Amino acid sequence: MTIPHPRRAVADNRRVVATGLGTLNPLGNDPTTTWAAIRAGRSGIGPITLFDAADYETRIAGAVSYTHLRAHETVLDLVCRLLLEKKQEHKP
Image (cartoon, rainbow, N blue to C red):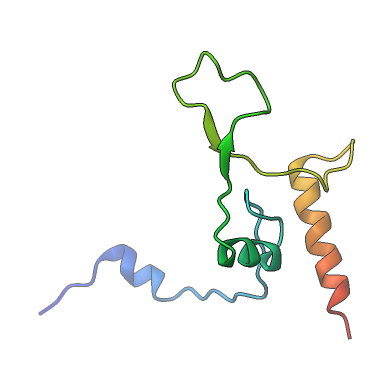
């Protein structure tokens, strides 16, 4: 007789529905831009430029571009705004 793992039994009753696709990463702030960069073989990794990294062992990183970020917005505000804009684009 097999006894199910307690966590597995709970997880089997949960449902997840993917209603869209989004991304915020060093290659782009939307799936289209990100996929194009991946297909072109571009890397999101490069020298750290946001601060002086001379005192750190690692001087490279994958930094997210905040070019869409308005002066008063936080990163969470940016993500919410971009999601809302995408939702508006797909309204019938």
